[in-house]
Length: 280
Image (cartoon, rainbow, N blue to C red; front, top):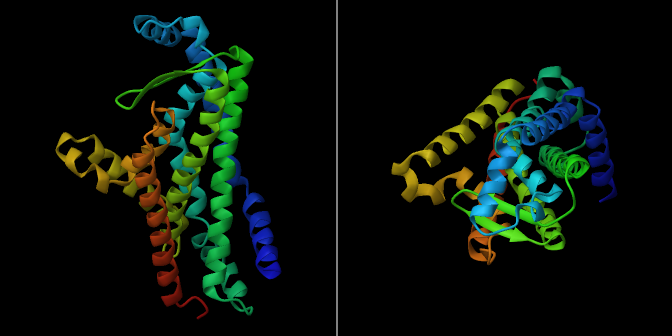
């Protein structure tokens, strides 16, 4: 176990020592501040206040830091998070092969499976840190602009709910655990392609293409009956945290599918990597 820990520590040092690892963090900071300005200076805030008032709620009690933070998260979780997680996941193995360092690593007494496991765990830790920073900075920036009051959650077609500040914060934290599952799945897809004989950019593009195809199919009415077979449909599991009552059955089903898919991509990648001739 101590050997595994030291190997993981070194892999994390290597991962977080690359400049491209921090591209996602910078993009999140910029986009969050841009969205805060848009929310404050455009009709966006007024539209939300009218929606609350039309449903019998006092708008000033729910236009809060928690509400705005969640509003900022929805497009970032859908668009930006998969991009930057896939960028790192596509690098984990393919970049080592491209740079020629993997051949030196495999010359040491270490199994290929353990090498991949350590890299995958390091990638999952990165995905968790990225989601944690995304949620923390969104809430922090929103608190600078808006008061700490109740939380209003509106996700079209899924959730319409109002919560106290305490309950809203608890659910906000829990939803980020499920977002971390989503991020680890995206990383697992990119990691799987990275284990094949291809460039890092190709692994990233293929993983994003797979997600994009799922997203497009989910939006086509004909495929509504097949939603449970689409990966992006199960990415909505974190929405159910905010429903009243919480949809435990749907959430559990989606999380189980995502975890199984994550394990499957890792095993496929490991099998492909075992069959590759890298030392020659």
